[in-house]
Length: 114
View (cartoon, rainbow, N blue to C red):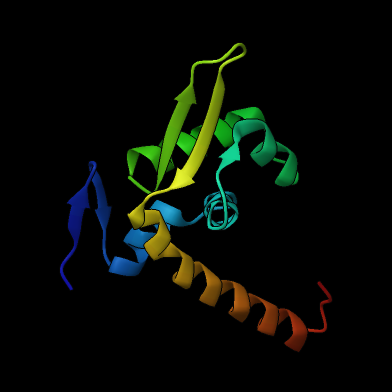
């Protein structure tokens, strides 16, 4: 496959491209949590170990920008912000599930308990 550009970044494979979109330490855990229900920022923050506000905000903004999640601002006092999956985000869940299952298999094979 020939190389291609997206957002001024060069990619060489579709796998590299998808990992740029949903890979990294936090994007898949965020998407995984949103698969079952709508989450508020504070709930996501509490549920993801060792994530800073800066990293959570950055990853949520990127997932929003790429169309994987949506953000609903509810005008209350204080303002409530909720995040949910879009159709595009829902399409990522079976892939994340397969990677998760494969990760558990590798951990078991390597004698790592979860």
